[in-house]
Length: 565
Ligand code: DON
Image 1 (tube, rainbow, N blue to C red):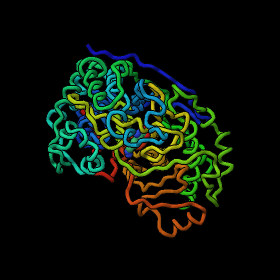
Image 2 (spheres, rainbow, N blue to C red):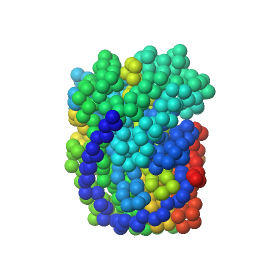
Image 3 (cartoon, protein in one colour):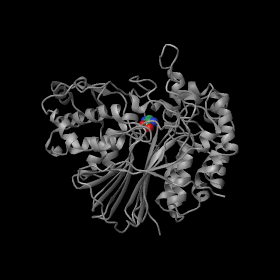
Image 4 (spheres, protein in one colour):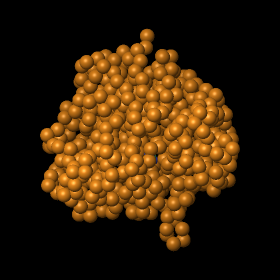
C-alpha cells in the first residue's frame, strides 16, 4: 500500500507590494525540456516524460536519479525545495522537504566545555545529520501532483543504483575534499571509494543497498523509508556511530507546502523560494532596492557597485531575521515592503560604498563550493519545476548507516551553532536560526520561476550563500532578453554584507574596472575558483522557442529539449 501523507499547507503573508499580478494559463509549448547536473538524471526525466508522466513525475525521477549518480550533491539522505507551477490553473507552491533537527538536538550541542564550536561534530558523521526530507518530498510530489505510480517514476533511479553509474571528474574532485572523513567509516568508504581509494574516472559505482531502500520507498511510499526496517537500520546505524536520532523523529517527519514568495520586476512575475530558505526574500529585497535604477544605462562598474550595495543590505537582513518560519516570526511584509526598501535605498550612494560596519549587525563570510544540485524542467503542457536539492557539504556527513545505502546529510551546520559564529560557508546567524528540536535550518537554496506573457524562465544553482546572488544575476539576464546559455555561463560577482567585499570570478573585470570599484570604497577579491552550477530552461512563447542549458563550469551536466509524440 502506498501511504501518502496529507499535505500540510503553511502560508505566511508573502505578497510584495511591488507590482504583483497573476498571468492567465496559456497553451503549453508542445515540447519538454530538462536541465540537470548529470546526463543520467536528465535522461531519467526525459524517460518519464516520454512514458506519459508530467513535469512533477519527471521532477521525482530527476531528483531520485541525482541522488544515485551525483552522491556528492544531494540524496535520499538529504532534503530540498521543489518549486512547482501547474499550467492549467496557474497554481504555484513550494514543496519544502528540508531536513529537521532531531528531537534530541539542543542549542549548544556542538559546543565544548569552553563554549567553543567543535566544527568536526557539526559537519562530519551522524551528529551532523538532520532528519532527511527528500524521500518524503518525492512521495508527496508523486502522490499529489504526478500522474504515474511512484514505482514507475523511481524505476530509473533504482536501475541506476543497481546497475551502477560511472565516476566522472566532478565525483572525483568533490570526493577529494571529503575522502579523509569518509575513511573513518569503512563501510561507507567501500561504497564510494572501493578499496579505500578515490576511484578513477570511468569506475562503475553500484549501490545495491540504496537500490533496496529505493524499492521499499517505491512499494510502500512514506512508510518504506520512515517506518519499518529502513527506519530501524537508519536509527540503529546513526546512533551506534554517535548520532541522536529516534524512530519517532523519522515517523513524525512532515513535508510542508509553502506559499511561494511572489514579486514583480519590470513586467515579469517572479515565483521563488520562501522560508526556511532565505533566497526568495533576499532576491525580492534586492530587486526592490534596484528597481528605480536603469541598470542597462550603467557601465559594468556602476552595475556591480549598485548590485553589491543592494546585496549587502539584503544579506544583513538575512543574518538578522531569517530562520524556520514555524519557529520564528519573520517580518516578511516589512522586508518586502517598498517603504522599507526606500529607507534602505536612502543610504545607498552611487559614488561611494557603504561600509558594512555602518549597517548595524554582526558579520558573515563564505568560501566557494559546488556541491548541492539544481534542476529545471518543463513538460509539454507548460508545467514547470525548479528544484534545488542538497546534502550540504560534498558527500554530506560522509556517513551511511550500514545496510541502508543512505548517505546522510550534514545540514545541521546550516543552523548557527553559536550566535555570530560562522558555519562551514562562513555564514553567521543569531536567535532566528539557533538550533531547536524539530526545527528546519535556514537555507540559501533559491529555486525560481520568472514569467511574463511572452517568456518563462526556470532556474537555480548550488553554491551556499552565493546561490542567492547567482540566481539574481540569472534573473536580471533573462529579463534583459537573454537565453539560458547566457544565464548559466555569466561571470559571477557577489557581496554578502560580511566580509565587506565584492568577490569576483577571475577574468570578469579588468584591472582598471577593479581599481574604479576600489576608488568607490569597495574591497574587491578575485577568487581563484569559479562558483555555482546553474541549470536553466526557457520557454519563449512569443517566438515559439524552448531552450535548456547547463552550466559550462562543470562538464557532467545534461540539458535537452525534446519533441514528444
Ligand atoms: O541549504 C543551503 O543553503 C546549503 N546547505 C546549500 C549548500 C550548497 O549549496 C553547497 N554547494 N555549493
